[in-house]
Figure 1: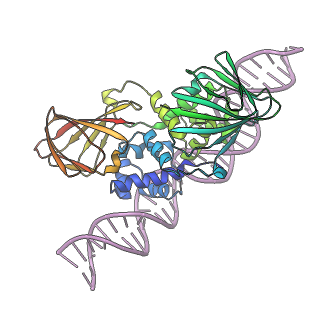
Figure 2: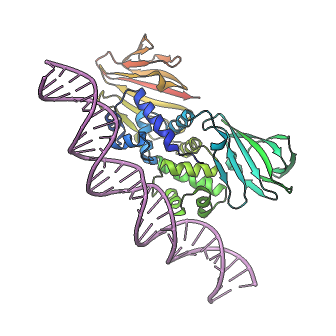
Figure 3: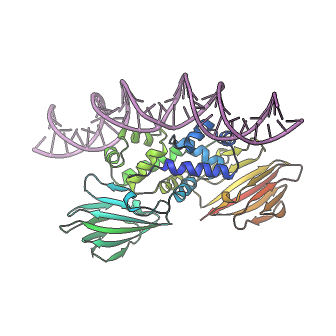
Length: 184
Length: 184
DNA sequence: TCAAATCGTCTCACATAGTAGACTTGCGAT
DNA sequence: ATCGCAAGTCTACTATGTGAGACGATTTGA
């Protein structure tokens, strides 16, 4: 159901270490993390804390975000439908499924919004990203910084510059739509 | 001396949560992480594991790498000389200082290579990055996939496509040079 | 062939990450 | 007031991440 980053980090860590031809002891000395711990992380027997991840990425000369990003890219490129992580908002019944494998440059997200439900996002949630909404089924009211749009199945909307916005489903059956997220 | 990512994560976590107007209990329910723990992380009293970071970023609908990257961007934009993290290779005496604040689009790194020292990198360490070397002091022999270059103070070299490469200092005094890293 | 070094894993002691639930504070509402 | 509720912190406990060093396996080297 959900994706533990410790798995992807394990293989990336091992890969980066071996690419440099460093032994566990080498990396331990360079990073200040014990070799026992590094061994456990590589074998997925422990989930490292942010602090040790910081030390490890420092030894590689990589910002932590880059290490994590390459871990996400190194993960499977095929995302099987039945394994795509689904997330539910316990209050509204909003349902979100992550279609794309982790690390994709454009991220596909399938959303199902129950009849009558409404969900809103602050502008800050969209910083540095561009998104399009393509309605698959049902109807969707979308408001963006006060301006409203009414979308039906097949319609596709490109979101403008970041502003507070909200989705709501005015119909009597769930609305399904695809969100395409590009970051940059 | 060194930068614990837990600090930057703390403020970013709080920022993302409050931007969505979620209480600790809200985020706890959505992420499956206890509110006590979220509180500790936000107050820098704990360094979260990769596993809980994965759950938290999932609740925000963000890939973990994006969450970490925004944490790095949210950190100080001024990097004081005396606080720049220095890293030493215990074997060769190689010295690396991270000049740029974390999250900069181009990263400045000052390196000091002791007389006679040699350091090499596999091609894989350079994937998805472009780099330039500018010699500040001393002399530097650089070999890139078999091709050699001899650099003196003031010279600047743009590295080509990823290939195994090595730095060595043929002189009798340390070589100092600046590495400019751009990722994309 | 045997010693010495190296590598990854394992053991154990300890610190700390993580949880459930009680507690404190602050804010309306009537 | 004072009740009720919600938000964040604290307490007590458990699970697990982390480090120092031992161990067996493999390699190196004379």
